[in-house]
Length: 116
Image (cartoon, rainbow, N blue to C red; front, side, top):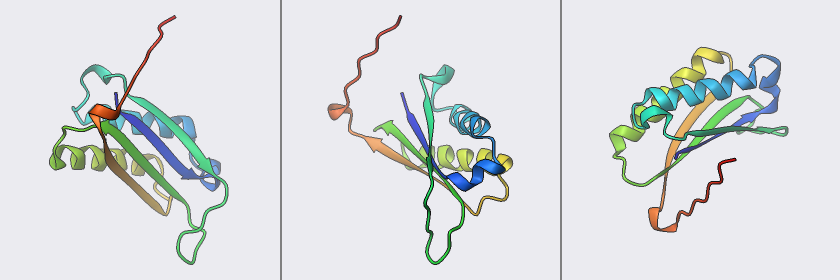
């Protein structure tokens, strides 16, 4: 069920294969052990053309992991650290790599899936 949204500076596309980045982030979530059998993990990437970080225009990759509430801080920390490590292995020259786990309110989450 988790949603992994990768935000990145479009400038990294010349050195990082974005399809491989999506796969690496997805695998980082799988490797956390929090989502049995892939548990319907949804991973996607969004490029930002215009970026400014402080006084620079450095590159970045940031992953937001949105998941239903119920995991403890240790589990979320293991998840985000694993994702960052998978990204770093793929993109060692990107200036800043970050990940955060954000709880979604179970009572306010709705889902409707159609299988064709």
